[in-house]
Length: 323
Length: 258
Ligand SMILES: Nc1ncnc2c1ncn2[C@@H]1O[C@H](COP(=O)(O)OP(=O)(O)OP(=O)(O)O)[C@@H](O)[C@H]1O
Ligand SMILES: [Mg+2]
Image (cartoon, rainbow over all chains, first blue to last red):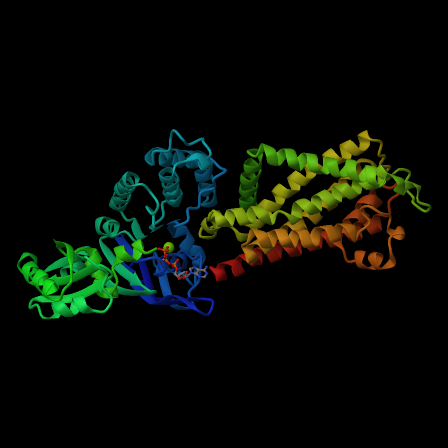
């Protein structure tokens, strides 16, 4: 692939596991140097597969990719010097201490002696692990292990950092700390971050641009605001009294003017409208006329969830709940 | 090449350090060969009375056999450590770093060799204590321990490769169980070569455990046939190199499967 100015470039990536599972189906995107790019998608969307390919762990069936200007398929060895990876399933050696984990990681990248010791000490300090540095990582909390993971990914000052679901499974407060840490990293000159997540809020907070991934393809791409801006008006969300299966509820709303994109999943009905507060009475009336009970109504400015819903026909938060 | 050696050493240090943190593992590893020596020695004591049995006492004969068996078993089970590292994502982390692939195998094998050395010394020491005599002296013992390390390394590399291909604990356990005992008993580890059935003698010629036992025992005699020792030791060295190469190749298969 021709090197470009982009820090990451993926084009037409496909990958099939066995005969059945098509993990990537023509996925592609471009990440400018020095930015945070989010891959947002539900479980099984192909986020980790993409990260594995871009970090040289795995190879695509077809397609092209370059990272830090180096072709991933042609020169994986050169790519490895330029990247740091925080994998979804950690990579910490639980029998080693934080300091030992970091030291070995540094040695692998050719750091030695005082330089190595200084760098390790610096990272332990920066990620709040100085006190626990000489304890075995098995005893670390989830948040501490994750911070150690990130520190290891940074030891050789990579140009591109991959964070695969860095906050999944962490407590909300720990997650907020982690967000601050990641936001801080991205402020550092030059570092490009590719972040995958299935938390909308995380993508919204951290990513300058993001791609919504569904079934191995990018279904939408842009900054969070651009993506939300594509959606005109407000979102109306109605919690129905009973689950709907036969399309009766959406049929009822077809006749209401100024309401569009009506979708029903179980007891949840969503629709879009120019002006939420003006449309609610008409919506309620139409549902009542159709004999459908209503439990609650909310009006919201468009969120990334709405963007996701619009592009995939499914709600991301719902998808998660059903797991 | 020198980078590969340095990386191997870093990996060896990690494995040794992690072992040192598991007191139970250490205790079992050190006590097990002792139990084998005492147990087999007691059970098969009468063997020395069989007409045609050359050694003066069965411990003289058995001690080298236990040294070899211990190394073979340590090697055969080595893949379990790979499974653990795979499950924890440690191997994936190394694979996306510039670490040399062979070092990920050789680091483990060097650690295995060091552990085997300690186990061998314990078995030999205990053997001497309960009356075994080795006319071949220190040189003979060094040959025995060295060849055992090569055998352990070969089986260890195969076990590591198997772990990378199968990625399942159960498979490694099944394969080790399937291979180790037959290999040990299809050799002269416990019984003099010309006293076992002819078909076992034929099969044993292709058995690396037998090569090790032969080299070790020969080197421990009063006047060893060094030609025989050297030929068996060379076979073991070639085998160990080949198995290490195979295990390193297994990373490719692993990476293709993820
Ligand atoms: N090693 C593998 N062998 C077989 N199938 C796999 C393998 N790795 C991933 N898959 C399948 O490929 C698809 C994409 O998986 P991937 O891990 O990329 O999803 P993801 O977006 O990271 O999901 P999650 O949010 O759960 O981490 C899934 O259907 C998954 O089951
Ligand atoms: Mg994933």
